[in-house]
Image (cartoon, rainbow, N blue to C red; front, side):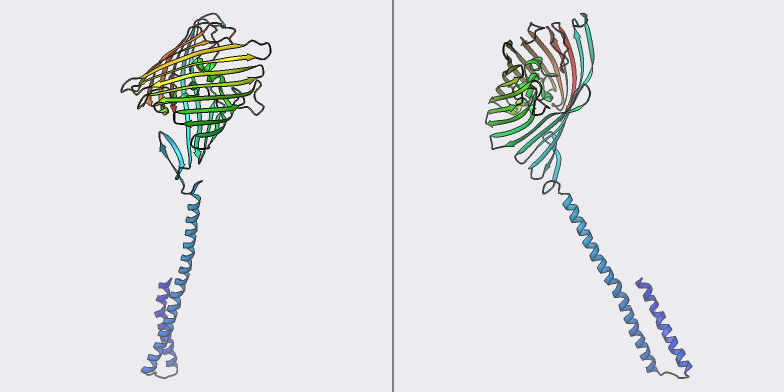
Length: 443
């Protein structure tokens, strides 16, 4: 626009000179040279004024617009920077840390770890004599044994853990664990929520880190399978090789109930103590010697008391776990229950033992294992015989416990007293043989 106006200035000068000439001609006068020079100078002064006005107006306008634009850009950038600071000064970082995905603040004060577990299982079950038909019976099929997802992490001195599970029979999602902890000092921690009753080591070891396809029948009937999860508050102490915890809860198997409790459980309390004789206790988190840098020995004991509407149940265990750096791992536990009836009801004592051994083949991802269990169950009126469980199998570790394939065969000479998620069926006193193959993906 500036250049077009500038091009009109010579035309204005020419027009002005022409008009001057016409006026002079009409008056029949001839201007002298000085008069002509004065006229040209006057016209040049007017043109210079016009150019100055034309140049100054757009520059002033552009300068004002640029200042407004700069302020707008600065405001937008400041707002975007403010919105990017999520939950922590300095922002969040995300990545892969110690074999798991982690989201955390830059100062490490806040961490969040999402995790999940999938166990897909095939089962073949043979009954020597079916309780319903009296004939041999064979059944087989597939199932999603476990599908779980959760979150854990910390915020300052607080730690948290949430876990949900899908029901293998209908797929419904239910709460399994929720735990909030607070570190009182370097050795003591208080916690509350819904969690496994802290008594039996086999139950406390995650299902992702078992040796066999699943836990033992001994654990299912007398151990953690009986106590299951509880709701309550606990206090733990850990210093050097010693770890101990005590819990006040609503009674065994009181998970997902309100404060009024279940129909039978009324009150409960539990505790466990562990002592690391030697070695790295991190190896105690599974039953395999995979990745061990040295030998380890841990001895533990625990107990639970649960008051029910018709009786009181006392559960107890003593266990030990030893591993070495050559791939050998051994675990054993003795456990039992004492059931004291109210009034004239009979008292029962049930007890049993389980032992297992595993060996990771040198320079290999293959591991072989064997397990044996024994139960004397006075509470089972339909089967006075002692129960035995013999299991043998192999593991192949694609990526440690995060991706592994497990296959085993279990023989129950005197049957199983009930159906269970282990793949066993109620066979009374009749022999049962169970084959299982399972793939696990977890992180």
